[in-house]
Amino acid sequence: MTVTAEDLTRQATEFLASHDPASTDRLEFLRARFDAGLAWIHFPAGLGGQNAPRALQSVVDIVFTEAGAPDNNPRRIGIGLGMAAPTILAFGTPEQRERFLRPLWTGEEVWCQLFSEPGAGSDLAALGTRAVRDGDDWIVTGQKVWTSGAHESQWAILVTRTDPDVPKHQGMTYFLCDMTAPGVEVRPLRQITGEAEFNEVFLTDVRIPDTQRLGAVGEGWKVAQTTLMNERVAIGGYVQPREGGLIGIVAKTWRERPELRTPELRDRLVRHWVEAETLRLAGTRLRQQLAVGAPGPEGSAMKVAFSELNQALTGLEVELLGEEGLAYDDWTFRRPAIVDFTGREAGYRYLRAKGNSIEGGTSEVLRNIIAERVLGLPSEPRVDKDVAWKDLPR
Image (cartoon, rainbow, N blue to C red; front, side, top):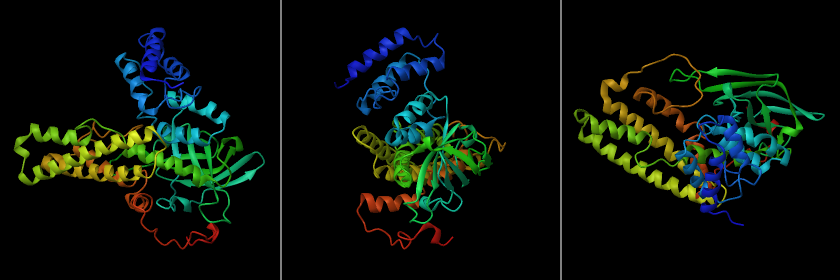
């Protein structure tokens, strides 16, 4: 039976009647919402959803928001929601789905992503972190880098090298890694902003049960592609309201500070406003496509456009503010749980936006994906495609 918007509105209203947000413990409320199938409604029954169309998620969210219900702090658990959850749903065993999805959605367990390495950033398939079978376990040793939120995470999605004797894309295996396990060490990476939201993670003889393997042995690249496609949609496909995000901040300054205006800055602001609106509408279309299927390579285009626009807008804001734009309020070293673009000043936004074209896939790699998988252009020559990983030059 197809679930309708009316069905979901009724269910959410009935749920709120028996779970008063004002008097129910926050975690208890979120757990009950998940169990009622009112979390992510497109997920299967019993896993927080009702197999309902993804496009109807907003129907449920509006009812809960208007009632003042607590949310699951999606900015803090974005990697879990946007990357780990869809991958576990696609490749996880029934036991893995049952174990991980509920505490992931409620925010009881925060997730991070152990993909990039010092020698395998843009070329993820070249990674060298080894996982060696030892009975019912795997012993993992290696180093990961640029890991957002690792210092606050209980679990990680992890890609490893399990067979060095085959070409690089074929010898990878994907795991769910307990970040509290012996041998896992998280070190901060201080960024140009003074903060350390990123980390490097060292894995030294970390023992991972085979029950925490996601997908078949040697199919880690296939599983990772699901994660990466969802990651790019999560980063670049978020739909802002008109003049939401950075364009709204710059436009507000323009309107309130006429003494800062010049014809050249006005021209740039108008062009970026049009770009932001185009990106917003494209994001709406991408979300509509996502509602009827899995994310495709189009998410890469959104990610590239998002990164370039953010960097252009933060540069424009600094120039618009003149000397004020050069000020930086606080270089104190800290390890934040989330990135706050709107709660800091222009200097912070300008510096932090530099990372947008690196995180979640570099713009150079994403342009190759767009060229080959969206536009159908010939692939670049790859002489290492059929060479065993162990024979690749390093």
